[in-house]
Length: 149
Image 1 (spheres, rainbow, N blue to C red):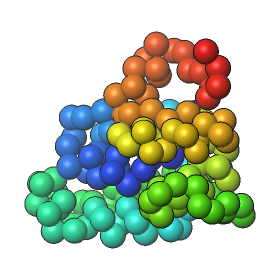
Image 2: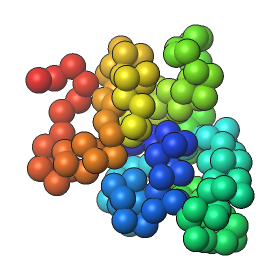
Image 3: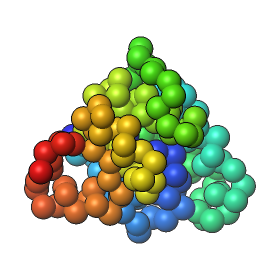
Image 4: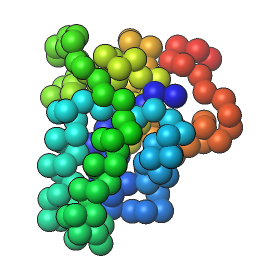
């Protein structure tokens, strides 16, 4: 399964070791799913995750956060964004995530912002699920591609 985590989902994983987002990061690190990233998305993760407020809330050091990002980057499938139809969404940062999903042929974008991502992602055959819903689908053993019932 090929997935893209939006930045807010990644930040949720950094801030809490017990949530659904953190479990998805663990699954990615165990290579139970394929995480898709490009250079811009990694830079966005790093920029946001290393903000003092997120570091304080996570109880981690900046070095710990860097180590998680480096580990994800080392196992992620790199995506070269060749096609970038604009605009895809109202938020430029959402477009960056969608670019990776579209060009990387993702099965799922994992985000809590389903409302904003879903209309565009589904046009490209990409599901959009919350971290919790994504884990539920994985645990059920069934996963439907966008557009299937």
